[in-house]
Image (cartoon, rainbow over all chains, first blue to last red; front, top):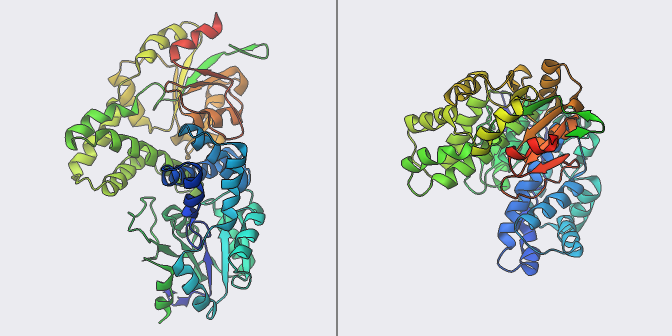
Amino acid sequence: MTQGNRPVRAWVFDAYGTIFDVHSVIAAAEQLFPGRGTALSKAWRAKQLEYTWLRSLMQRHADFEQVTRDSLAFVCADMELAASAADLAGLVTAYRSLAPYPDAIVALPVLQARVPLAILSNGAPAMLDALIRHNGFENTFSAVLSVEDAGVFKPDPRVYQLAVDRLKMPAVDIGFVSSNGWDAAGAKAFGFTVCWINRNNAGTEKLGVEPDVVLSALTDIDRLFA
Amino acid sequence: MTQGNRPVRAWVFDAYGTIFDVHSVIAAAEQLFPGRGTALSKAWRAKQLEYTWLRSLMQRHADFEQVTRDSLAFVCADMELAASAADLAGLVTAYRSLAPYPDAIVALPVLQARVPLAILSNGAPAMLDALIRHNGFENTFSAVLSVEDAGVFKPDPRVYQLAVDRLKMPAVDIGFVSSNGWDAAGAKAFGFTVCWINRNNAGTEKLGVEPDVVLSALTDIDRLFA
């Protein structure tokens, strides 16, 4: 994939929702609250993101584990699910062992053979470390960057700047990959070359910028080089 | 109501959802898409707010009418509602004639007799002017402040600062009133004395700050003075 005549010199991936399936917590949620697991997971994810945006704008940052915990507590109360402290803690801990998407398992080694790969995630460092170790990705990424180094969440440009600073490349030389349409928009507004992975045929977010490429799976990225 | 020993010297109101019912567009939506009006209104409002937060963080501001139009277009496509350009324009225009909540009609004149009232809203000036004229509130508010003067949406502190600058009072002397829990949290983080109007018994947002007072209607504010 080239932007103008410049090839992508590194791929930077969003983690939650792009490499790792946040809805792999459904099984644990379903066990606690039979028949409500999918609805809980969906509402939890929406509230979690809302809280990252609000705390960033309010200048009241807390790390992603705290936001994940707070959003789960709000949603359980809102859905009138009687969750104990241990239930809540168990579900938050499940974020450390999310499953990767099948296309991530296939695509990452292929891409890694060509250029360096990195992660740029809302996750706190300890959450990301655990997730990467759990899934055996210790040797896949040359950098795992957390928003904690910026003290604010995506899509604040200071977050995307972390990848430019670490990789020491112009933003346009970096291919940024996200399944979150709003993250793809934020990354494009920042200046990356952006692939939006639209696995579920979602509509394009109307935020005034569009990704360079829309693909249906991570395995399609490699074709862009062919 | 006092904060420490300081009385509230002015009340500043959020507009959409606090004085004016954003869901008064349901009737128009229902006429266009029978059986889907309530779901459309709810999804539209959620997406509209999401876009205000994302554009603020991305530093890609567009005014509230644009965001309202974009979020409606996204949601209609997502819900597979075949909306014509005229349908979309009609619904967006309905934001200029939203109905006030019944408790707002009763409470505002009572409060106005004591201290100055103002509006501080995400709305663009032309939207707010039309809404206030439509509802006969021309003489109710001594200031109608739009985020357009800050170039960013709530809960960015630069928005709340507009009220301090205009009213020339310390933030803590200003009573800020919102039905949007996240707006109440943002206003409290900024330093206002905050009333959250919780008409529907919603849960408290877990954003690290809490409003000073939670009331179920605007008519309860006056009791705080008694």
